[in-house]
Amino acid sequence: MRENLSFQKVPHSVDLKNSHYNLIDTNGLDQEEGLATKPALLGVVKSSHREVLADIYQNNISMAVWQRSLGSISQYAESLLESSPHFAFTSQGSLEYLSSMLGKLLPEAQGKALFVEDVALLVDMFACLFDLEEVGLRLNVLSNAMCPRFHVDKIPCRLVSTYAGSGSEWLHEAHVVRDRLGRGGRVNDHNSGLNEKGRINQLNVGDVALMKGDEWPTSLGRGVVHRSPSASLESKRLFLSLDMI
Image (cartoon, rainbow, N blue to C red):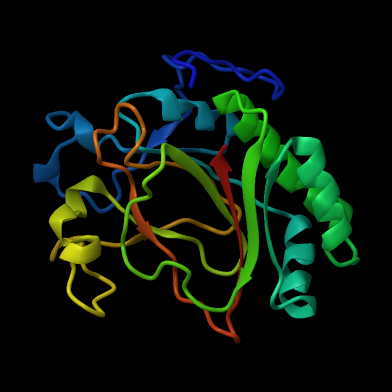
């Protein structure tokens, strides 16, 4: 994992010390949780510029979100929910291999080429950011919550994006009670780990988020707390995740 990086394949590389266009998300934090006195709470940075994803290398950032509109890409994503309600693809490999496999396995419909091109873009960006030859990819149509309880991934970092349906839910560090996560939580309590006065945040459709996990070198076991949103046969979602290999 590189300490200092610039995009190799994605244009407009950025100076990590001068990302002036990025917005630190403090929505829902009380004044007494002042970020100036608690820099560890400077956890989430958002921007409409895709270069924001490079901010994941800053020690005081736990999640970087590229906020974007899918435009016509969403039309194919929505059609996939109807034409292939059980679609599930999990694999690992190079950008060329993953793109080829998606091209073969995804159903034919208007906008397919544009959709595959967009997934390939995210794979390319992820590989460039972390200097990867291969990437682990999962693209699923979901009709139930894959991970309904708040938790932290036991990995260095993961990219997540929702192409259709509800986006992933996450918590600010100030609203987390970590000893209630996982086995420390109450049985069947999907809100276990949420502070009594805390609030649940949610990514939007199209958002591309890099979430640090517990194994990021400087996170010290304090990765982003998140969970899958509810889903059903009537309200499905198309979810993408990318992992380091």
